[in-house]
Amino acid sequence: MHSGQQQLDSFKITYMLERSVPPGQTPTVEQIVLWRHGCFAVPSAEPAK
Picture 1: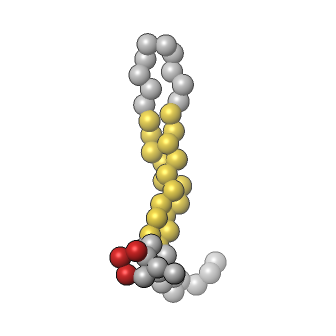
Picture 2: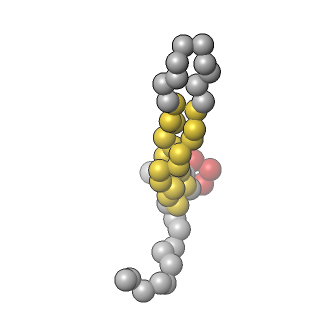
């Protein structure tokens, strides 16, 4: 078990989208955040729908 500075606070999972392009063109890379997670975040008090 880790504590203090070694304890994970939050993380995100990022998908790197790079589409194939014709030869001679430079592809672009788009970062798409799929998930953000706060390890110690308190859930909101909103009622479930």
